[in-house]
Image (tube, rainbow, N blue to C red):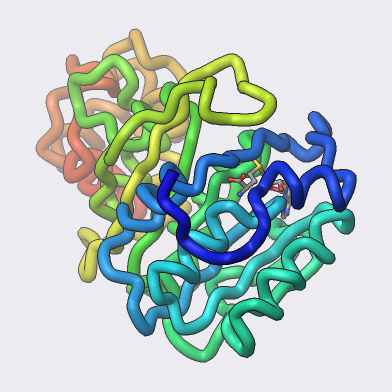
Length: 280
Ligand code: SAM
């Protein structure tokens, strides 16, 4: 195993700090520092960069990010037991690691640090999607973050990167496709985690689209909620939920009213959202 630093092995850190994995906090730890180095590399060069990491736990990915040359790393961790372990890493890399104890859902994580960050996380599955939606929905765009490297259950990663016509295509794919370029980098077997989760994970890389097609996000959300709420129905049926004539809406947006939501590309939903705004 390649050594990335002179800190103790993660198993020792976990034992010393009593970091037995808690299901309630979605804890599945990565102890292989070669693998965490590979995840850090998925962000491209981190030399001199600011990184925000959510849910560092005992710090396997944090150590890889620091060893990769990040100038500043801001971590937000909810588990009080992990804070002392993270402070040991901070002492090893003076002035470079800033540890916040808290709930990432209650912190403006993208605002941490002086420089626009790369956001990285092996996310607890129960908070992964709400955090992602928050990072894709700031009040002004482009967002503060420059890239994100996040791990999800493979099934969620498939929904994030799905294109029109894919089985996994839905509301999440439209939002992600509208605001970002999302690419699956590689899968991680359950065996790589302690304890192993039930499913395979996938590392996804995001870059923000500098200029997403103009559209009010709440309109896009309403249109996709109606369309995918009845995803097997034709749009002329499913879009009735929007309270306007669906045939006229589709005609004005240039979208086939006999199409089903799963075949409509992001641009079609943006056009529907913009026409709906004018019609209602
Ligand atoms: N990054 C570590 C790794 O790769 O080994 C730990 C990953 S573990 C899947 C998820 C981590 O997120 C845990 O350390 C857990 O305590 C933390 N966590 C869970 N909910 C959180 C929340 N709401 N805010 C911040 N951290 C949270």
